[in-house]
Length: 395
Ligand SMILES: *Cc1c(COP(=O)(O)O)cnc(C)c1O
Image 1 (cartoon, rainbow, N blue to C red):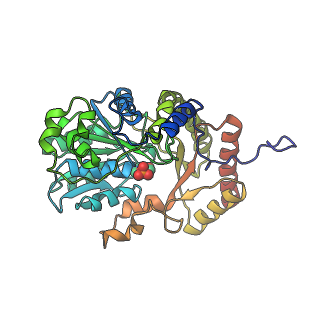
Image 2: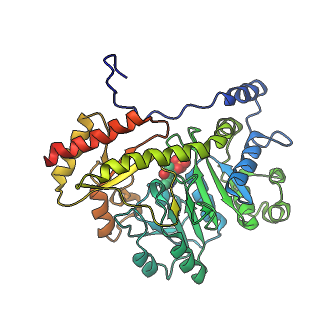
Image 3: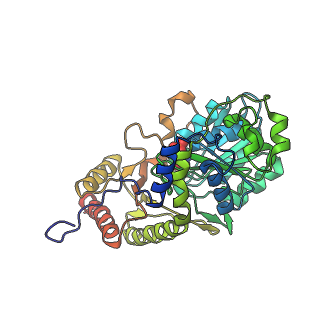
């Protein structure tokens, strides 16, 4: 709030502060120096986090690692795919997703995404024959049609990994996102719902996948004995798999654990915030916030909307600039230079077939962060700036 009572543009790039409760545990860890997850005989913070996260998701096993990207990579390695295996991924996702596929010695096959930011099921069905695995990235928390995807993949015997980096708390048909495929991967990077700076976790009900991922994450010698319920599988794989050392350390777990009881509240707040702004944007004929799919209950901490009707690239750029001048950062995914979410910038993949539908979407889809802590005044400021920017360009 400015001295004259005017609301200032909220800083949406500040991370969420860490609960006070983390401090005592961090002090205890600093005093003892016990930062490595496998030093304590039991109840290390990372092990407790895994148990708590598995309980939160209703999954049998959880493995905490250094990032969601590490979890995606380990998930692919744990599936024991042949070198050069084809992995279907949505063409709208973060560059870390195709990167994890390349890192695992697999070949990503990009699938078209519609203007509702979800996997195009016709293109998916056409590309599925010949695929060895599927990695569904619920980009910005938008859930693709998991019923249709699982029906096709189950019928073809193709395993599904869920990139749920931005979907903690999202529910699909009563089931938690991240528990529908064989493996679900989540992120604790600062811009996600739970902030640890960096960190990731994977969940699965499959004891073989869990055991293989645990060994490869760096549970060398007999450290896997500190993962409950997996002794037979882990004993079998010990020394047969490479160690990639992607473990989480105890300080990260100490930062994450007190935030887990806050997830439900953040999800509820995030959804209300999103819907409050969406209603204002949808009242404008030039903007459209796509509806969630029927079975989907979202957990958003950002909003995406399309510029609809006649917009030239120059008008879309002018809109971005007008919003910025009004204090709100709007990114049109395809118009911001070098955007890591635009597939044509993933040059490390080499030449790719064009994906005209996804390209068209990216050229008109806008991205605005809405951290769950924002209050109504701040949300109205953001919506007002976006609507004002449309008026600046469209009159
Ligand atoms: C953030 C994000 C990732 C990467 O997570 P890291 O923990 O930073 O590796 C992957 N996929 C999506 C959809 C993301 O939003």
